[in-house]
Image (cartoon, rainbow, N blue to C red; front, side):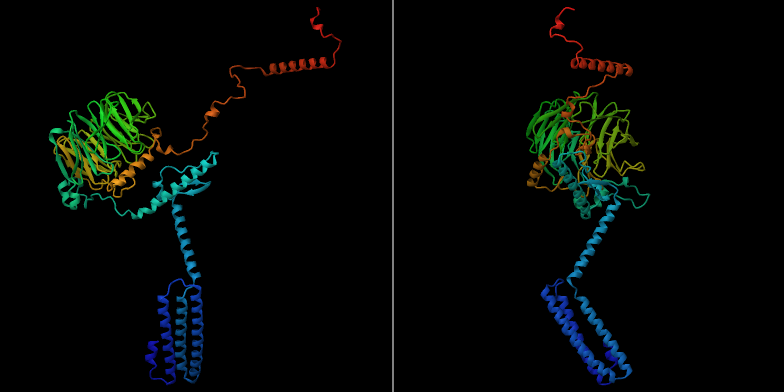
Length: 623
């Protein structure tokens, strides 16, 4: 419109009125636009009625102005007619734009429906990617592909259950499992941190050539402070144990010295020198209590170093371990006993016996099965409700020095006196997957949460990234210790490896060994005292009985089909059982049945139609 005004300045005076009217129109349109920008998206019914009235008034004014313009256009030339038509078209376009900007509530509702339909289509695409189908309330339900890893146990269908209350309960549990898995999948977008390994720029560069000084110089100040050594020479060798949340460290020397520290802050909680040697140490439910396997018995201390319990049943212990979800302290003694002690009630639950000299012990974090390694190269798996080992594996030809199980419970790593490291598949086959040899005799091995394997022996510690992959032929890192390494363990939620040596303790950085995103409901490194108390009470309420420990933890919650109850088992059977050893001729059986039938009929006929009169005493008379 501005261009047209500049071009038509030299034309007839009749056109000036047209331009004045058009300028008025433009001013009105601008005021309407400003009003629309300041108004809300959704208007009430009264406001809509007022707007409709204003629109009608504006249309009537526009029609009157157009009539006047048409009269003036008829008097003007043909060129002027063309210009006016263009101006009228532009005015109509402005009116259309004005009306299009004012949207009704129905249009917004249509947009909402379209958005909901698009969301449903996206969900259907996610479901199409999944192949796992379960049934809830008799209807097939698909589990999304990304949510399968978050399922805690299989979703069970209540087939064969007659009790309606039990049916509804099982269906409700299945719905909650599916909802929790989907919610965990959606929360993946909030997990911004990722595991960071060292990556070489070229094939010529090797990560195992990096020393701790180079790694510490390239990280931040807080991480570089996690590299330190503790000189405790006269009391070694040392056993080490990190707490579940990774904040606290327990040191136990073979000559009777033990100490518990907050290694991140450098704060010491307790330190004592005992008269008897210490063979093993383990934290219990949290850092408030820990157990020490001494020469004769097992003792429990608090975080201040005060002796709380004296376990006389655990005589001459050699190895200790703790099952946090069952509140069970497990000890293997030199007398051939494996003892389960429930610390929540202070009672011995199970006592089993094993044969052979014991050389290593570890637990499976997935199913709470205890693995025992012997000098004969055999690994045995034990559960509380079985008096005998449920699985036996012949792993090495030499004595087993150490064992470790992955966090998922799918792989078992063993080390032998011959320097061999072997990996076994614990899912179905229990077969050897991979094996390699080290230059030294491994004294201890440990697996991190990200499957980084640490092997310690002599004055060296080798680390392998993803040892389950057969294509890995070079170690990830190599660390040289000041003295002989006896025990290694990764710190939870930290890229730190602790090494217990003959002269003390060493802490080194292993980038990528810790989980970047921790679960605060499972173990929170920043928990306060109140949160720790609440977590202890919650874990007591959710305590799992020791009878439920099995080789396959997914069995819990499933339904066994075709199981006879005690009532049906001892119920009296009405049907007679046929002796399979006795054989009868069917022809003789028919003859016997026929004779019996004839005899019965004859007796009945004599009673009903007697052939001769007999007295009642005739049978007593002499014949």
